[in-house]
Image (cartoon, rainbow, N blue to C red; front, side):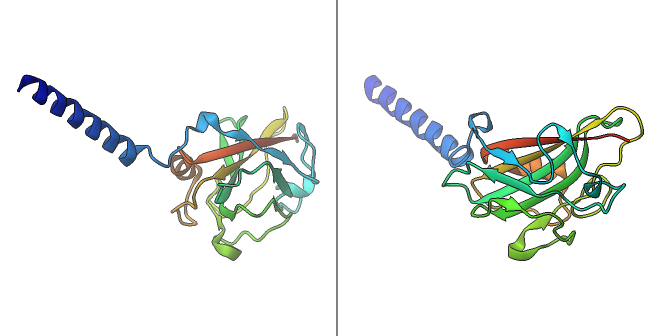
Length: 187
């Protein structure tokens, strides 16, 4: 009788453990295991200056961003552009998400509308506008602008009012691959 109760207790523990796993972790990925994407641009090379046309000193259009190495199981792409050298901490210049995974680039000068073709969404940057808003650092040392491309296992249930913190929370556990391209700008 005691052996039977012990076996039942072990079975219950296994069932509960499996249920918790599938409820909270099934379908999620460890972001640390993400494959590396190659991210490039015809607008500028990695660790080189961003052309004035892509800044607030110019016509302020987004640069072209190209990526390769997206895993087959990816469903969507998200991109952020952040200045980690801003005086108040990281400053977001662009978030765009729900890009179909079949695409391999964002062209230069896409519209700054909140919702684009194919339900691609331009989130809200730290200038409080949708879409890309380029570098405008204070005069002095060069700032870095890190464009990060994420290949995700799902589309994101976020609206065009989403900010970077919303995006980062939503992609946690869903990153299959990521890569960066860093440009600089100095006044």
